Image (cartoon, rainbow, N blue to C red; front, side, top):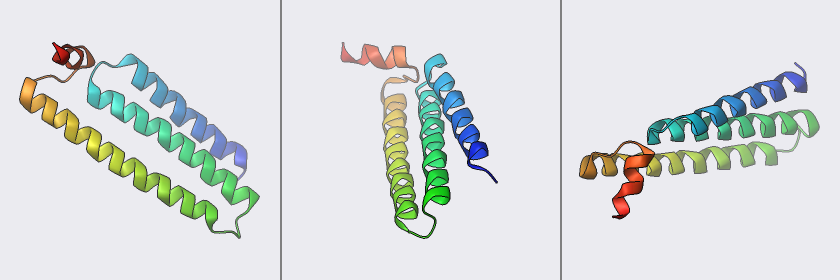
Length: 101
């Protein structure tokens, strides 16, 4: 395994996530795109840790903290989307923007 493969995978995940986040109007699909982008960053960070300083555990701790924070963030996001859908039947960003009025 070379770092190039991991960085290529990370770039592909980030690119697919960016396309998904920018091209979709559904809030859930935008959140899934953001999730893919964060996963790409995590893969890149983990590969840098693995190839630069594999003996030190701080890279593993950083990855675990980021994954934990990402999990909480996505759970809160899906809870807000579920609440919006139940209250106002809004599931796209255009419908959610009209909730201010």
